[in-house]
Image (tube, rainbow, N blue to C red; front, side, top):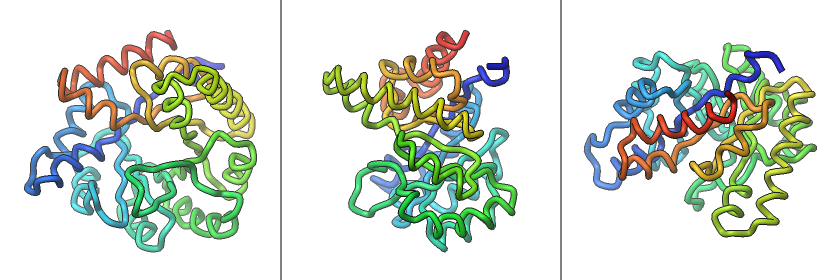
Length: 250
């Protein structure tokens, strides 16, 4: 690993600032203000998921983020014609294609790339041509990673939810199995030439074992940090996550 490959970036997902705002209506709390605080606290990028039903992030939020951010925007979206059109209009630094179901509370698993390979390859091509880095949110599964590579994704984000759930439920054997899968599939993807990110469910308790994988260059964390901000403030919550990540890498 070179020094640059050891650098671990933190992407802060601000979706659930918008969730709180939308619960009551009006303009507060403002996701754009959260994005600015996250930048100053050490975030290397901002993640926002514009869902079909607009349950949290809105179209105006995306426009505002494109206007104010000095760090990259990671635009999460489903593989739909509407979202592709929006991404091509704004041309964010990165787009992360995720599965999406209206009835789910949050993204429940990785994208099924193998089954939809031809469709996704056609969907990805215009985004790459527009200069967006394309990421695919997938389970730590060899076949899904290989398919993501074939369709032209430059980045994969491995879903860490199963690992985090097992940890917090005290299922130690399952936790270790899931952590091993994340480690092995990070190495596998890295060897294929893909940039490797990890996200979903990471907390202060679960972040360091994942941060130790040198093949991983970015962690995307949102819901936990928004919740922790209630107790300690958004800036200190992010700085503590940054400290834990850096402690492992340094």
